[in-house]
Length: 201
Image (tube, rainbow, N blue to C red; front, side):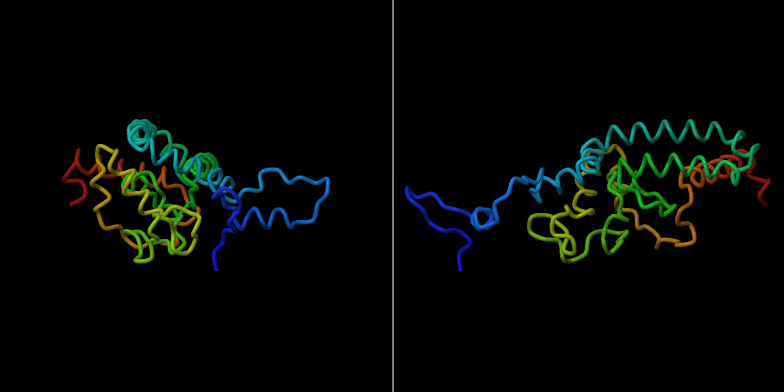
């Protein structure tokens, strides 16, 4: 059965229009009831971040360097003590920009600024076999596939080929912890090891 009804002069009325006309009439006019508009608004910032992945890659590199310079401060105060305020900021910034799920193992710089934790299946190494023909998710038909967008974003980045790196499974014990602090502490430890290669022997 067709979802359109032919009318005069070759025009057509969609099923949505018919449903709207058949709806009870009242003074109440819902604002912004278009599902497509809601979907676009829901993913607008996330998709902006992917489109501007090269700019965010540049910014994140400088941000990581600045955080590493503050390592002595974090170490002096204690990483455990600073985690709560840092995590508070990180959760809100990344939540707004990327719909971050605070897995504690951020790989945005390797996935075109598209967070793989937004995948309903939480796949960390590429899309499943159910990506729709329009590039949308198998589970959430209105949502662009996280990994399709990850590939698009990675093509804009200087180090976009990092998307080919196989990611480890998510360590659930790190959920709701600060990836910023963890990466900083690891980078500081690696730098100290490189400067004093005999110290770890």
